[in-house]
Image 1 (spheres, rainbow, N blue to C red):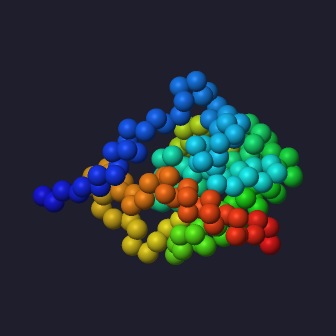
Image 2: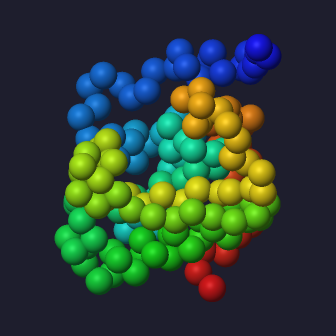
Length: 167
């Protein structure tokens, strides 16, 4: 049996997930006033991009409306348009910063039944690289991420200012 030693992961494993008092993280994190701590990499008028704290791959972003809603139908037309622009910007940002080969983009609609852990509408933008999937998630129920959230935030935050938000 071979052993994997991603020693840096222990810092991530032991890090606090959300402050205990935080009941609605997608609403409360933008109000912190510290985008680095909140892992917010971009804000638009009606939505924002935040690094997923439980990512499938490095750079896994969530596009989240500022207003607390649970379904696409609950958004105004302006909010839907803004959220889609934020998703499009996320792809441009990730392409410029991390150079993925492809993307998975989607929503979990319907709360926990659909796989969502937080009942607040959010879209997933997951960068994919050729060969990024391996046996670990299937056989070992383990995901290996080669980069910390903080390092990914640094790269994306530095690149965000250079990437146009709208075409």
